[in-house]
Amino acid sequence: MLRFRNINAKPSDPVEQWGVEGILCAFERGSVDDWRKIWKSIYVDKSKIVTENVKEAVEMLNEGDLGYAISRLF
Image (cartoon, rainbow, N blue to C red; front, side, top):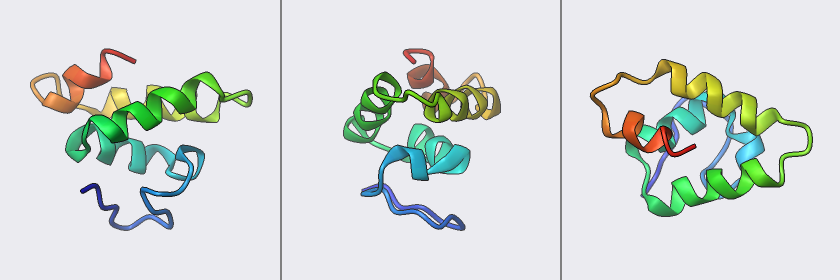
């Protein structure tokens, strides 16, 4: 189960509220359900906030991490 630390959002909140740190956490420690939630949020993101946060989170990942491999799908 995904848990956030040091941010004012919960995994049950909309991805728009997760910010870069929440998305990064989901890539690193999340499950397929968390990644699916991010994926769906990108497609309904009219303001492009989620899209920009995902791009920033991807830049912070290390190439050898599973999260990095998953993020490449986005």
